Image 1 (cartoon, helix red, strand yellow):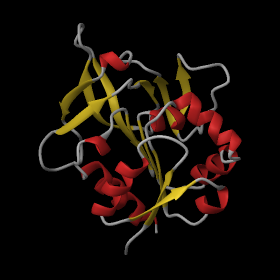
Image 2 (tube, rainbow, N blue to C red; image 1 turned 120 degrees about the vertical axis):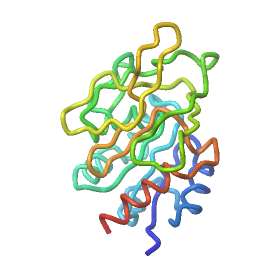
Image 3 (cartoon, rainbow, N blue to C red; image 1 turned 45 degrees about the vertical axis):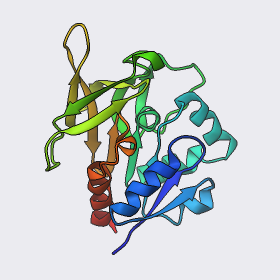
Amino acid sequence: MEPRIGILALQGDVREHAALLERAGARATPVRRAAELAEVDGLVLPGGESTTMSRLLGTFELLEPLRETIAAGLPVYGSCAGMILLARQVLDGRPDQRQLDGLDVVVRRNAFGRQVDSFEADLDFAGLDGGPVHAVFIRAPWVEKAGDGVDILAHTAVAGDGTARIVAIRQGPVLATAFHPELTGDERVHRLFVGMVRETT
């Protein structure tokens, strides 16, 4: 079966995610309206600017439909800003920033620094074969605290103090990474997500 996976197309790396989803065996389609959300088997929340995306969700009247659909069990994958939107709480966010409450985590926004602090790292990613995942971090968050039902899939060390920070997680049908796998051409994270979607359809 070829699942139909939507990509929230308000901002961010929509085309890059679409290309990897297609390679991973899914049909990718943009989602901008609640009616389009109702037609997909899963959804990707791409990277971008989390406060802008939060505002656009309100403008396009998608915030509540998304919350309800995620709570009802729609498989969702969020990368970078998508991880921030899915968290139940954000540190260093704007006061008017809205959350989707899809993951029982506390996320620190822009935790690794500004654009100039962007970096790449090879990560051991639980559940993925084929060796380390090469990860691109751009103004990336990290998970400050994860609830008991959250599976931690990958860590990376912080430059300077060497502290291992959580950068990939899964809770039931919801997956999130602090990095951008869509920028490397490695579709393994997307294949993992497509498999998650297939499990629910």
